[in-house]
Length: 418
Image 1: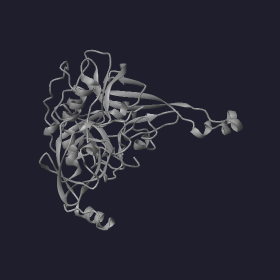
Image 2 (image 1 turned 180 degrees about the horizontal axis):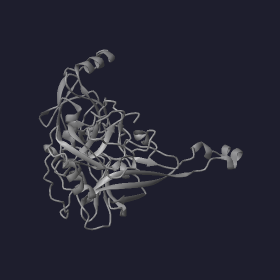
Image 3 (image 1 turned 60 degrees about the vertical axis):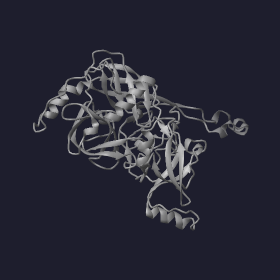
């Protein structure tokens, strides 16, 4: 995309915000077409404001239930060159194609409602028009009675969702819930006795482990690629998606637009991640949401249709000696910062939990609940793992003096996706 990944609220003023993300160009694989072809490979929300997140010149691009029926793990040796074949033959039927469509109505500029234009231009005034934006992505079945996981950006704002199984059967899909903050969604189709994927433990993954990706890149159904886990715990700010609250898996398995929402599998055929993003212009740099995160979010979406994320309401940046010196120089010494590390609060959102708790712009957060803070990612993780309404004890430096404040997180206000 042409700029950093978009905030679902339209800004970065929340507890996961990072003022200075790496400006990697992120593409989240989803194939989009409309009256004219629209190509999306970022956080595609069927929305002109966010389509630029996945735009290119070619077509682009929850979790368990007690009733899930998962296939037994595949016992395959990665020394066997056919282990990928064994995995695909066993679980490939649980990977689906997801097509979504949304009707978008263009708005006539307010100026044309002025009586002057009405009088002198009459029928020549442009009228609202409608167009249909279509997109396709991937997904995988986690319940034999039709629950399917995919990315939120694959189905966001869709009027119609269609799920196609590997055997060619097509079903209308109902979106049970979606969470733009983690980019996870759950779809329900009316079917029974479906093949499902077994869930693996993404917390135990190590760089170098073999993985397999299955999906529908560029509309090419049931495409299989393989590679390794290149890294774990890539923060959202590391890949330029600072509004997301996910620590990603990195893989060199080929992930392309249209793979969004598809499974990343280990050598036993267990799903250990949901493929979701690539860095534009790079090769061998794909990213997946760890399955433990997907599973947690999906369970909440299935049970209540939404996910409430804890929220403080701050804009912040990791403090370094260089940033400290720059601030002191720009303010002529009017800002007194003693610490060389911590997190500098740049702005506090009015009426937010941070504002009610007494935090101010210019404060440097040095610890939360007695845990030393050295960067933005540490605050993001603490807040995301906190409980809404449960106070966090924050130690800050203000004008060179230590201060202890109590802030109670509230639910993150997520802007309507319509």
